[in-house]
Amino acid sequence: MIRMILSVMLTAACLTSVLHPTQAAEWSQFRGPSGNGVSQTTGLPTEWNSEKNIVWKAKLPGHGSSSPVLFGDQVFVTSYTGYGLTEEDNDNPSDLRLHVISVNRDSGEIMWDESVSPINEVQKITKRIVDHGYASGTPACDETGVYAFFGTSGVVAYDLKGKLKWQADVGDGTAGFGSASSPILYKDFVIVNASIESSTVYALHKSNGEVAWKAEEIVRAWTTPSIVDVPGGKQELVVNQKNQIYGFDPDTGKKLWTCEGIQDYVVPVVVQNEGIIYCLGGRSNRSIAVRPGGRGDVTKTHKLWEVNVGANVTSPVYYDGHLYWASDRGIAFCLNAKDGEVVYKNRLPTGARLYASIVLADGKLYVTTRDSGVIVLKAGPEYVELARNEIKSDDDLFNASPAVSEGSIYLRTNGYLYRIAEKK
Image (cartoon, rainbow, N blue to C red):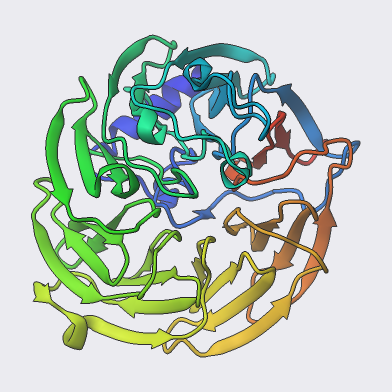
């Protein structure tokens, strides 16, 4: 209870903007409070396995590849049941249920498990869909509740006790891979990139799910939107999409600037540091650095560099003048953030596959592979592998990015949610 009170007090003090890791220990949305994949927590474990440094292991009621998020004494994850758990499970799409689950942070016990039915026709199960499922978007949470995006099944909001507040329809369009974007919270809004479902970014009111504003013509973007800081204490909403990077006023949805971007669909999340944003994406793998805050077409004035290395799925972190990520092709990269020059390019253990994005905390880089464990690297411009951690008792794939808070790492598979920490 004391932890929850302190957490609510801290969050209330920061309501005017998206929280930054230096302002809160919580991991309240995909890739942490700022979306940068960085935590200031210390004392994280370097090594673990099925018998070592597992504080608890919670059995989840269904499949999902969304990441866990935290608020107060609760850990939230999403899952799905009823349809599409395997390719052969294709008889009754109407049986699909989309779950939001609250797990007690201290004990690992399920506090509540609530679910809704789809709003629109369910995308037919395929091999590509079953690879990650119908619960790919990571929820976002604060003292007002928890908010989750399930693609064509809509956006749902629950209060912290599990009472359904609303469910909103943001489109019925589909693509081969399905849905992947995660919601973010800004002031009184839930912002959702429904590019795949309706070519639209929506800002919905937290209180009732009604549309506050929307930005249309968002093309081939599975990425989660980012709130970035600009000079003068202002903030912009950045959406990286096919061919263009857009900057919006997050209060009104007005488009402020455009910059020529990656000539392909985009999945990775934009990260920021000291007035520069870094954008990855495309099957051919590109990386672009842009200075936000301009107006109109800023390609010639604000694009700082572009290089032909990057990632198709995974997002980077910034640390001490360098960008780090591990691509879905199983290669770890370090780039000089000033000019995009490759500092190192190192193949991960043979066969390593990735959907999850890298996390920086406690001077270490945590790289979650799907089936070759979590590889821990030293954060620095030289490739140094510190450990490789596998939970061999769990045969499921590790598709989700970790959440990090107060000395603990939270990992999930289709079957389980884990809390990992140094045991005294």
